Image (cartoon, rainbow, N blue to C red; front, side, top):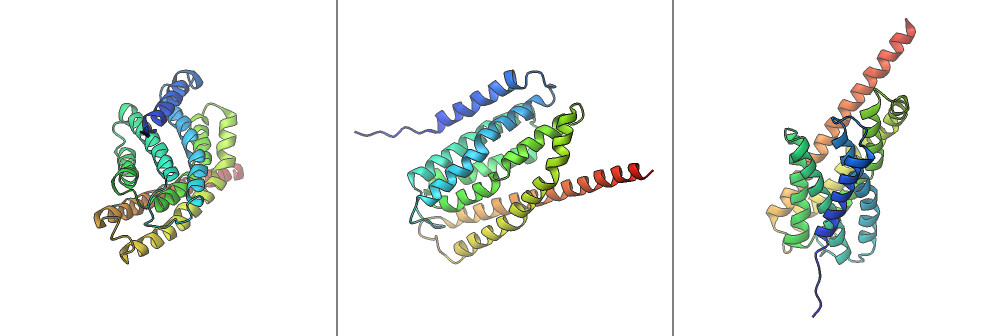
Length: 244
């Protein structure tokens, strides 16, 4: 009799190991205030870009892909991979930043979407994985930017990386989260609201997906808008000082 082992514990152990190595070895000489964030970036590096390629492969390998199509085995594997990452990063926030309710809520609702798609309805992975790609395609730049920002005050090279990387990262993030993401969400909502998944995905499930993604995109737009304002103020201040 053939048995299928759930890969979720294995994936979680990988992210846990990476986090521990990053926290206690890779970033051991960093300030205790920023070591947890740096370790979180380490597991994000291990998840983000690989997830983009894995999700892309899982989507392209499914000839019958669609908003309400059944999940393929490879698509479920990618979902498990991402569930493991968000569980590990949620644990990170609960231990080190328990008052950061926005990120904790973000991880909880993201896990809700992945878990319901993977284990409750077993349909709709195409839509969820496209959204995963859009969310993670900027993760490499964001992690480098985050690490540089954390050390820019005491490391000159980090400050240079931060200043050089900020504009292109902001542009890429703005395009993905401000235009591509909302457009895909619109097409997804159009399909579901027209009853395209009524026989395989309960209404409360797909409506919750739409709500969660819309909220996440809104928060992302607000975040990047604030960063653009901050960058403008920093550059304007530098120009004023040079002009004196």
